[in-house]
Length: 259
Image 1 (cartoon, rainbow, N blue to C red):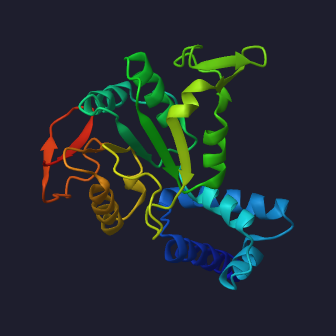
Image 2: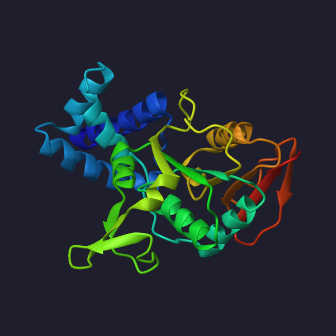
């Protein structure tokens, strides 16, 4: 009984530490999976979750350990063309700008930015930039490498096949796409100025209401006049920003900054 109580207390301490230091919130239904993964990771580096925590609160945990722990604590569900209607919506919004600058927040391993790049190129856009951010360093490393299992949604003209056709590698299209490890609730600004379109899909649901509103406020400040902020459909119905028009769309929730 005492061991079970101690284990629960250790887990609660980790949750508190992740939030206080990185503003990362782990939904209750995801916590068991997190702690199983954390125990497995700790065992692999000859530690326990308790000894890792002890080093963490003494600020003795190396960056490579933190990078993996943050990776385990955050959601990375994604795939190419996960929501084609939203991809088209972004393209429609981008069409109003001479050189669209698109920011994908919470891009995970990069499938969304590459899907957007493929779609824009397929539709004839020749001058655009897409920047993806995620809190997970391993995710950003995968995105930057641009190598994935072959996916039929991505034509070969955008990603060459290799390894017997089992994998694909993005080549020239990477000139239009960049990535950055970034914590949206941290103090460091995103290294991508004045995006015309910001998209964040299914990331806000992992934060408490106060944090969600703070994220939306922060992102809205990045947009120039006429810019668009796109979130998942009905993801934050309580956010009513001044100076924005809410555009009705079945695919997503869209806010446009007034000129």
